[in-house]
Image (cartoon, rainbow, N blue to C red; front, side, top):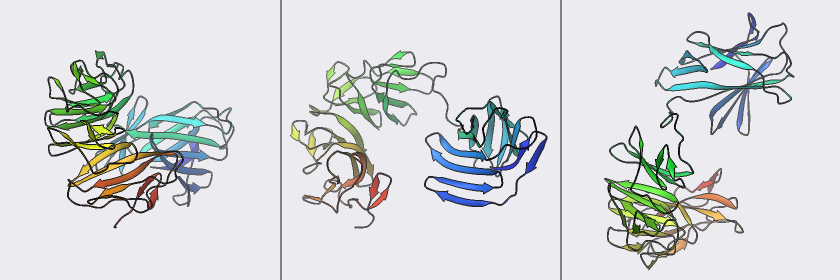
Length: 372
């Protein structure tokens, strides 16, 4: 989508098809006489701003015409829906913001003007130029779960789905929609339900294996059962995994029937297990000498288990390790901010083979070394 004309309604001037492209840090700009298109990416979606340097001549509302490429437009009450020709994916333009040089927000609207055109109209009578026009778009496939009913009463930290299409969420909440649900709940596609009486404190991790849901967090009870920081829901009742952990479980991952847990704990089932451990269905075991700081994330890929952690304060390097009969520091670890996610280690003892990724190429606060 590009700007094709601007000016006053009924008297817009066509823009040239070609201009100058400039790249600066997180922004890409397409510059043509009188107008700059600025592109960036944020959590809200792809942001495409239109910056008008000077007030167009004439009277009436400011008019900006946008031409679509590879998509068709359909008008809606609060903007327009774009359907991508190649994939059928729908994008919604419904969050139009226009501000002037002083930061004042101006009255504006976005309308469909045919299947390949959108029109933005702005009341700029009292505006100070330049103007910034931001018609941020987002994915139309997002929908509210139980629209009209409040969501969770507190933070949701983890989500997982099972083979039947049920969604489970865990966190710090005690209410989801209009259902009392202590820190964990299930969405069946139409309504929320509790899992028994839930767990006694915050949930940080979820994992599903068939009909079994594994839950990790800071709780010490699950239902009426004593369950230290980790528990299993079998669809009807809660059970403990041995005597559990002596501190928080932040992450879970499954490999076959084995359950891997990572967190801030030092023991699992009474066994010394520094922040990472394995449950084989009957008992807990350590993974070598474990990790030297809290584990925040786990993932299994084939025969490899990846572990990520948070590095906090004081040190400039986070120590990542591998197990090949012994534990050792690989490379220089990961540098980062005082609180940052360091990328992933692979566990090699019980999972047979692999390599450990350590400090090297930097992408934001994520680090990965390819090869050896």
